[in-house]
Image (cartoon, rainbow, N blue to C red):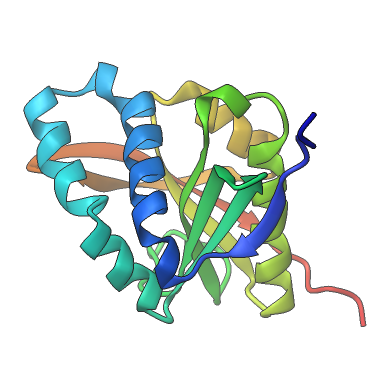
Length: 179
């Protein structure tokens, strides 16, 4: 019987193809029922192509962490250093741009393990907070982020192809690790 405890590792450019397939599937599982199929395809064809993932994995502003069970991706998170919204409380923040667990692993701790890795990374690299955008209608995700210590601090627009959708901006203040 396979151990069902995920192991974490940084993703590399060699992970682009399996990560693209996983990212497309998990994003579609979450949002396809709420969005027009043509808009979804327009967004996902670009955002989750192997070429796009290769570029993102090669960009030092992005940190991808995979949660693997055996040789299968059970979830992943993407941290991104970049422009932060003005509504954040901390001076130095890092974005949790993506955090997805495979549907079959929902409720089994994969998301929490990935979020804990994000928090650890932020603390070790002296970020004052983690922030993310979450679709307001994704109640399951909002509850997960609230349980993880995030609170809504504003809104921003996420473009699903050419469809502007309002997201909550949520932030979690980070304590630096004790030396």
